Amino acid sequence: MLVSKERKKILKEFISSYNLKFKDMELLNRAFCHTSYACDNNETRKGSYERLEFLGDAVLKLIISDMLYNTYENKMEGALTEQRAIIVADKTIAELAKKIGFSKMILTGKCEGEEGKYKDSILACAFEAFLGAIYLEYKDKGYIKAKEFLIDNFKNELLNIEISNPKAKLQELTQKYNHNLPEYIMLEEQGPAHKKMFTVGVYYEDKFIDKAQAATKKEAEFEAAKKAYIKLKEQLEKEDV
Image 1: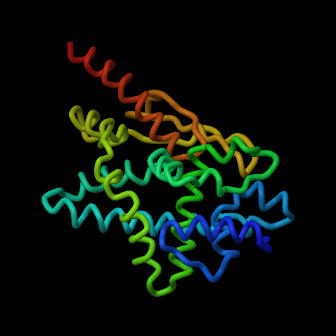
Image 2 (image 1 turned 135 degrees about the horizontal axis):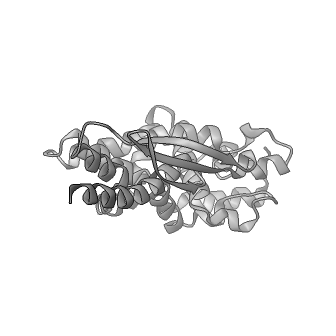
């Protein structure tokens, strides 16, 4: 996808604030291109941020794992895994994206409209894609540069996030009673590829507990676990009476 002079200027101004330089402006621009924008401009899905998001998601998780491992020397892997899950959740990453003005940078198509730029799922995906673009642009120094960007700008926020993982809480609750774990099942997918909604149900001992709908599977599981925890806790407490 060709990048106009005006768009290049906007991109350069944005990255210069974070001590970043890009030779490949198409790569950088793609990190902000939602699928709907690519389709409106006669591009395939490869013209959107989806492939970069896949790479950036892995980069993000490695950076966060690295940071937590070296910051909390006395925490065991279970606690570190729980903390990482909260940090890399869409809602958390979307807040980081909002803080540095990602909404102004994201390009969406007609079907998403301007409001699409403010969705947590789109903001989080673009942020991960941006990390993926940094990783590729800086080649053998890509991980270091992506880590510098994340830690220099967000370390305090990342380390001070309240740890309240509903999936972990639900699992802890069920393990107090037996060794059976809650199960998350995809119940329904609705909408076009670029604007899907996922409905996930929570089951315990083959019994339906509750369900939730969200723009990503991860977020739907997260929200369903919140509801299931409250309901199951009440049920189990009544059985003990």
